Image (cartoon, rainbow, N blue to C red; front, side, top):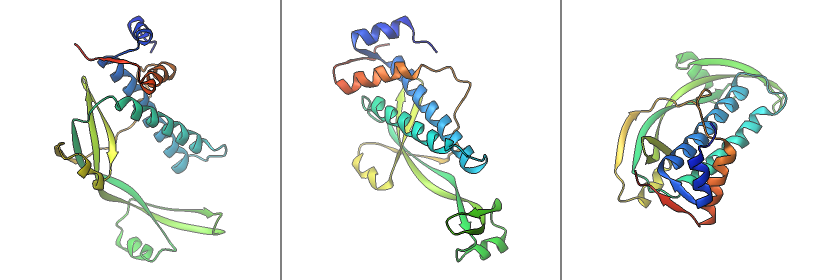
Length: 202
């Protein structure tokens, strides 16, 4: 999505509006999710002869770094608590592999040649529930989250912890109409410079 004339004028005026910030956050957050999804694709499903997983991982980290800078001008609205299902592999050389295999308590089993061990290795995959926490920010009609360790909650005594129950996986939207990364980088540099004005008037 090409930045509007208003957004370009705002950059020259060193002004960041609520909608402008929301669109920038949506851009980098969605691109980070797309990069994460592609990284997982190359790690789990597609032969990766050219190091694509690592390339997408670096892109993801870059987008999340930009997201943190953009969120730095806001205060979190609350802490979200939830439960997610995490994939956990258990390999045949681990003590509880046979027990899990016999129980049938897994969603997938497969194998591969382990170049480090120089042998074929079998594994099972389980979906294990895990409690997670997120700092939650609201900008206009959009919400953005940042992972939070349970030990860090004490740093936010004034924030309410809201239990969201089971949290469904979030995936990137490859069809979304987003601002260009080049424009978002200009906003990020504006924030880093410290010489900007927030205009959140409706």
